[in-house]
Image (tube, rainbow, N blue to C red; front, side, top):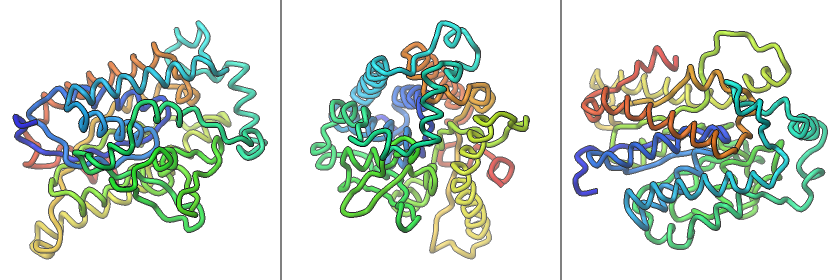
Length: 338
């Protein structure tokens, strides 16, 4: 890491199995020794990626982080292989890689609409807990973490965002960040119940503003912001509602950042807040073509396909924008978010 000349923060969105796209982006960024990482703010699948990356950096530097991410996603695929939500040969050949035509998925989807996880999963089994515990030594991560990690969750009782910081990192904190209430019972930590952080911050940006020195934030997008077609099916409507709600908090923060940057440029807030430089790595046109149910598709071939798309996007972004880190934002905040 001593060769790195530019320091950035990362903001990682959630999105189920689509988080393998973020894996690919991170895998490529870790190979660029001109860059180092100060802070990571993440939600849901992004929280899984961010925590695994932080642990890998802590125990083995860049190569350790790459290996840890690959190990984590391999275990996700192996765990899913024992479940009923398997893609058919037609799913594997289709462009959208969805499994919504699977009888098992249709039954699962219907069950989650009619019953709560307290009913259909009374023992509160979550295979992600085993995967995370096998991948990460949380005691060591809390003691030695080399990056500032901020995980977003939603407090069920208060409706406020909860940010778990380095000293609070546990497997339950990571699971809280990714606790979709239709699928899992609320995660209880110190007497409070938490759901997925995407409802209040997907991810939040303010911890990186106030908790880090670097002014550069690279947002790794999973959820499309714009869709040209009006959703017609029940699943497409629900998916679009989730995309809008999970993007809304990020868009509000970007509006505030744009306003604050304008005030700083005019000299009104120069001593109170710093100008934030925002960057984005995404594949929106690609992500829009993926089926709703592909977020549950943890087939290894699909995960590595998403990884490779993420690596390509990161490669292209570095070639076009590395020179601008520390100099200016590489996206039009108003055009993209406002």
